[in-house]
Length: 219
Image 1 (tube, rainbow, N blue to C red):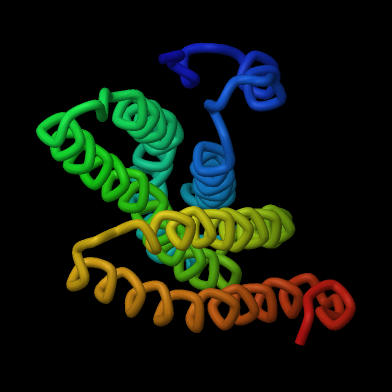
Image 2 (image 1 turned 30 degrees about the vertical axis):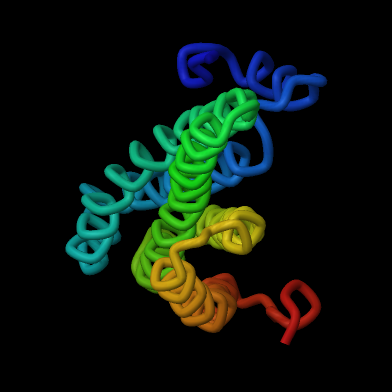
């Protein structure tokens, strides 16, 4: 499997555009989340250590301290998603010519399906936290960087929504009823929460930029 993080942006996008099965949408969701985290880090760093914005420094530092680990995690999840799909394809390719072989294949498929759902679910969880951090930073950062917080918020929300569909695509194949129920409940909670968090962050950011939000983000 390719190590996406060691190559160039162009190489990753070429791979994404290719006829190969990986990377795909789940990996791209990780990239979107990592991009959001990186923008929050940048916005925080342009606030910290500047006397003019000293009042915002504790909040900006707190955001930076959390956004950097999230960025690293989401970058790793870009590759974890591709690895999960490769594991699933390997399970699909297992022999099924005997009852024993079918049982082995079924167990491998279930294990691979669980991983294939857990990776985007983890991306979704981390994107929720990014949306929460964006809300904090929108009201507590260098005003020249507020538009970058807006971009980070859109990336985080887009990555979240992208991760959600990847979870749902695997959810129907999970035979562990308790696990499927837990995933479904968690998704429902996060899907309700994410657009509200995004809008709250954007409202604060647009207020700081003295711009109307309506028209740029749906009600």
